[in-house]
Length: 162
Image (cartoon, rainbow, N blue to C red; front, side, top):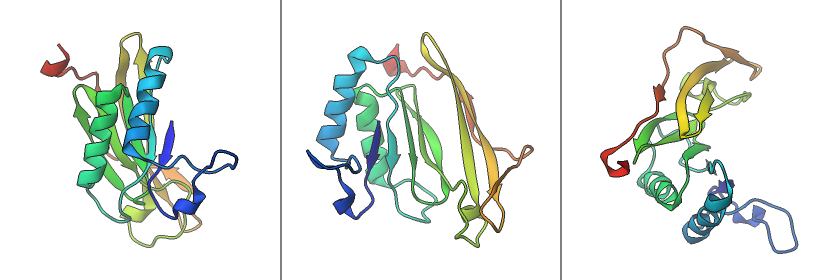
């Protein structure tokens, strides 16, 4: 499921026109709840956050947690043009921003860095995950940085989930 929170909203799909699915909390939650009973995996991908901000905003954190509460298995985002970190909420992974990938409009190191997210699932959901760092050269072509540390993890079960 993909949603956008970055203007202009004129890109929003209409009843008879193509476009983006605009992120409205109530609709996102309703979509997730509708998908949950018939899906093996519900993973919203969000186009959100402020460009250049190294930490997710309160808005991102609040909505990500609402999505998990509604039944999302994993929440992934992008847009800030830098990586923003990860967290577990009620045993579910949230990746706030993957940063850039194949992008050539940044001179600073954070803007030339992105994560490749790998997810492994089993019958119980997300079993493990990791990110691989990619660095964009001057032409915007990504090159993996194999020995660069980045977030990874295994299934987390919180006390609220037990």
